[in-house]
Image (cartoon, rainbow, N blue to C red; front, side, top):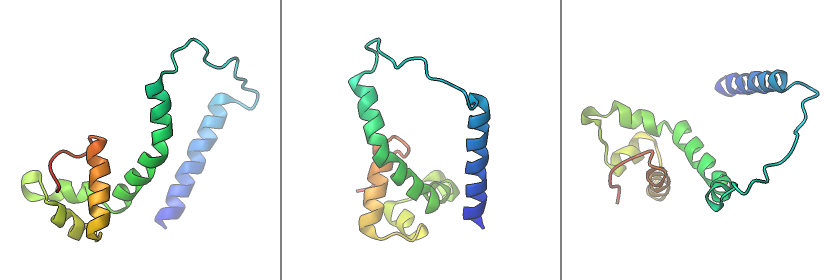
Length: 108
């Protein structure tokens, strides 16, 4: 049911983008002014690693578990148990989320 709802939302978003751009939209030119920095290109490349980790965190309800915590903090072990993760997976996920500055604190 959730998957169907998400698929419907994505289809609606695609339809809105197509309507905004129009079927005859054309790209006039590519950016050639030298502003495509190494940082921008690295961010684009890195996104293939960021999105899966963020998707996992959302699906495992990691942020919800932290927000429900009394005192506003959970240990890595508490997050692991609350989100039903194994230790290796929780350390990997929390490391990525912390490196993205989506979480603050120590988890090791």
